[in-house]
Figure 1: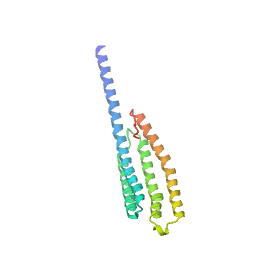
Figure 2: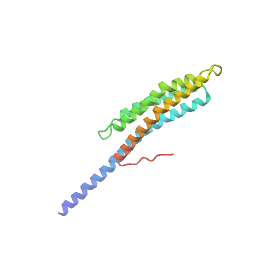
Figure 3: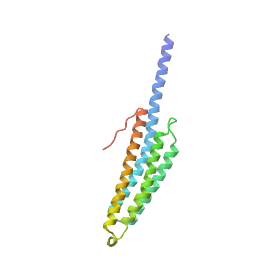
Figure 4: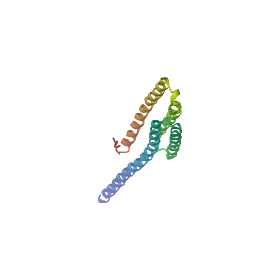
Length: 167
C-alpha cells in the first residue's frame, strides 16, 4: 500500500507540473499574438498622428508602414498554428487583423485623399465626408475589438491565466 500511495503522489506531481507547463505554453502563445497586435496598433497610432500635419507624403508613408505591418502580423499569426488542437483564439486574431486591412483600404486611404486636397480646394463637404468615414470606421473597429478581447479572455480563462489590462 505504501508503494501505491507514493506512485499516486508521483502521478499527481506530474499532472500538476503538466498543468503549469500547459498554462505557461498558453501564455507564450497568447503573448505571441498580442505582440503582433501591439505592432499593428503602433503603426496605426503613427498613421493617426500623421494626419495632424496634413502632409500627404507622411500620411502615405505611415499608411504603407501600417499595411506592411498588418500583412506581416497576419503571416506570423498564421504560422503559429493552433494551440492545444484549438484554433479559436488564432482565428479571432486573424479576423481582427484582417479588419485592419479593411480599415486601411476602405477608410484610411479615402481619408488620406481628403486630407491631401489643397487648402484652397478643401470644402466643408470634404470635412463632413472625412468625419463620416471616421465615424463609420470606428463603428466597425470597436465592436471587432471587443469580440477579439472577449475571445482573448476566454482563452486565458480556459488555460488558467489572467489578463491584466493597462490603463
